[in-house]
Length: 430
Image (cartoon, rainbow, N blue to C red):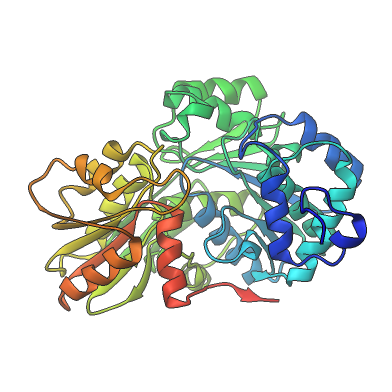
């Protein structure tokens, strides 16, 4: 094979998925280049249409993947055909596109990459842009009634935003990716609101929205439905409770994903004309599980995986650990993070919850060292540093007793290492 950066079309037709992904990594000098002009032109060249499908675009700092998964399960329970684009993946690239909650064969992804490669001509695309267009190709070719699109970064300038949604959802607004989206929640809210379109319905899952989000709602003239105003939820020892001005659910099964995202998803479903009785909703909630999100993989000791990697997400994780019960003797944290995250602010919400810290080097580009992570811990609790996530995890398990909780968090990369170690997946192949 000739150099991967200058392949012939004949060679590309024989490529497997791994070769295509290496090629995607090689053809653009940066991982991120916000803007829609280039990706819009390639989309136009692909000549794709979603006119016969209902499109829901989901943006937010946290909670996008779990909100999409809940809506997906609910629609599937009503016998609808559903396609989902979600990122990043944890183990297998094919996780990024689900049709009927199943991954597609490698050959399907290779075909879609080939179509984008032909359509882009000499237009430069980032890895994410190329993958987004390939996902859109796969979903447009499917018989899906509903298309769920998870925004990768921000909203306004994200590649997903070339598609006009019928319904827009914002799950949460927190501080992350400030280099790209702005230094404040007010600035970030404007970027998220970029998925709005004139006069469509919008669901706002963020219970404390910045004023700028209200301003964007007025500017786009959308019909917005707000968490804690137009719909609300709470969780107690009787279960999950939810209501809006039409429907009420009391004492439903407690979710294995953040309850805030179930609440947001329920309102989105209601606006799509989908309603459920309590028994149906309980079944949907129990079936909604997402790899790496509040993901319990063993008991005695309990091991929980969560991709929480910013202050808002770790605060929610600390709350969820509290909601899991007080039966744990100790909480042992295995933590590895990217160096460009706000490590100190992300650790702070967990410091009162965690009794021992097992810090690990994250051996990927941009990965932080265990020493750097440990330097941001302010408590006097046990802190041990390791050269890898696997070493830290195995040592934490050796240290843990049956009544303890081991929580692994800090990055998608951190959680992926444990999932790979265990050979775990929640997604079936088509």
